[in-house]
Image (cartoon, rainbow, N blue to C red; front, top):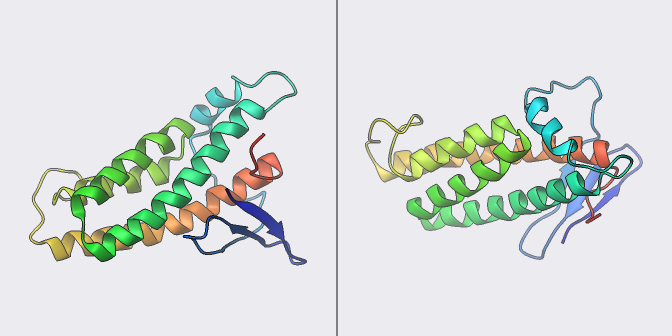
Length: 166
């Protein structure tokens, strides 16, 4: 389970299970670039909420945020252990759940991890020359995912007020 607190300058800090570290979540900028999310897809989730009650969509979002945080921790461990097949599997897993919410940049990054973990290029067409090349590419994508995680978490805190189970 995670908790969120906000300091005086508006920065939220999320803490999760003992296996994760605190992540500083910046306050959402209402003028921010929204290219991280396909709003048409996310709106389909919002349409399932009852009028005046967003607990359905919030439950999906909270589940995804917790799942993404745990998956990132797992990916970092798998990178250190050089388990490409499991990295590919975790990429596939997070790709599907991010696509459900319309989180296109996370979805696309996870698809690359899925391919790199299978020793293929980002399109899944050509073989990569070495395991080290695949691990290096995955490491860079995981770093990008961490930044994307901060963005989506900030947006969802702005949208829902908190990310505790409804």
